Length: 306
Image (cartoon, rainbow, N blue to C red; front, top):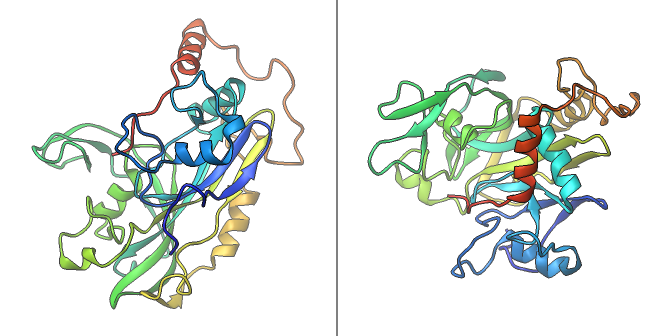
């Protein structure tokens, strides 16, 4: 696999208001220190110097985050108005995201819904991690929901592995990694939540990839599907032997699914058969909501991923 560099930034969606990049693994989105030789922010400045906004801390407004070790689709807003429209979609849970992963073991069920509540780990030496409710030191666990669909069974470097599609229905920190670990099927290469054995030294990366993203803003539907990185032609250690569900059919289902609206059953602009809502659509914002929204726009920064 090609290592990350300032030149090899992959763009999978581009409009006047948004970019969606295919982020490399082991790459920070941004960093306030000079010790990071490469970040996504630096790649963007190199590729699109004319799009950098001097009024922001990093030059670009990242609409969401991906962990340092996670690759895949990440949306960048190119102006304040676009950032605000994307923010509303995330806040109202109208965004559709799906990830690909290789996890340890052969999962017998073809589909699972994982509902372990997730909280911050207060255990000494583990305060940078999250944990499920009931774990010693778990603070303030919040409801968390993930859909898991098994795609293939196979071997990774001789060990049993399942390739899965993960759809987070909530957005907790490290949610997918924690949920897979709690099932007893940690993500291959996850040194934080994986099994503490020598086999975790083998993978060259954590096998988690943001595969599909759809953000149904009122002005445009931002939709991107990135290439599948977990193919035997790209990684000789991965040897699939049993197909459970074809990925292309699941992609079609993702694309065809109606967008969840601010209220259940509300279609969104990604459905071409439904006209875009006109002015005044939806309930008016309260003063508190407007204040929160304006503060988010004026103070938009991100801390480096851990």
